[in-house]
Length: 219
Image (tube, rainbow, N blue to C red):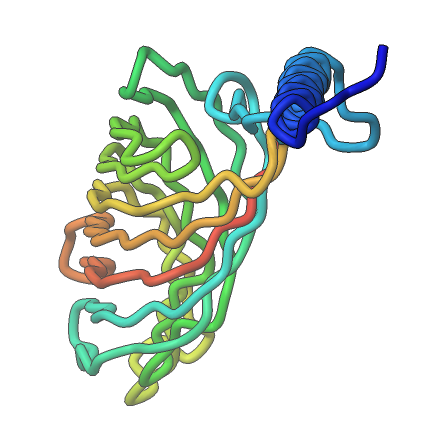
């Protein structure tokens, strides 16, 4: 067929261009759809980390600063300061955003003044906490405290000194952060009051504050 007019040639060119554009658009849309349906190799969505740290038994270490007064009959009651450190073992149970638990610890240190020394200190306490985030716990704690007070030789009243067992209470609070599902790091404050034997010679008591860090491993 021979095209005899410019108008016919122009019309055919427009139709060819229109068909070409429509074909390109269809191919582009189909390609996008297939690409959306295909998995992208090497790029995976980041898994949301979950924490099961708060359930179960744990063992840990603690250490920090202690300050308070160690009193005894006929002895001064100057403020004693020093370091306390030791071990703790406990168990927690998570109930939604609430964590309850029981912990016991035993510490030794150098809390001493005027010949009177807190030789060792232990506590057994309940814990009640709230999870601010899945990995961050704020808690209160309280329970029984027990220890040993070494009475020194101030004024030579008791030249050889003596050791006094003592029992009392401890209250406080703390925070703990779950670094992994097995390791937790925290800080704790305790106010402790100990009352020993109460007679004319061995009347003793101690009261003070403990600021310490804790590191726990959950089994």
